[in-house]
Length: 134
Image (cartoon, rainbow, N blue to C red; front, top):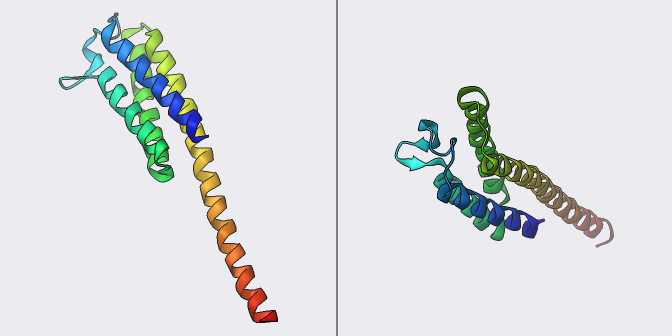
């Protein structure tokens, strides 16, 4: 699952970089920047961070930042739909990528928690068995 998340994050970097390089109605609007920083550049940095977090198996941080990315992407989607009334294919693809990564990060975090619980119960079983037969 980690490799899939890394691959999707790399795809997100490519899509965000293409959005940054190839303008359009959406990417040239006043809403395409957060202060002086283009939203697509924030996307490149965000996907790079997600790839690094997935590489180092930082499940909690991965979960946090993917869902923060989902919130940011949802805000941008709202702007496209209700303010600009124009859509960028790059933004739609990026929204799909971050959604898939967020779901995978949630599943991966759940697996990590389940593994920790299993490890703890195995340790308790060993202690009880040692006390009983030791």
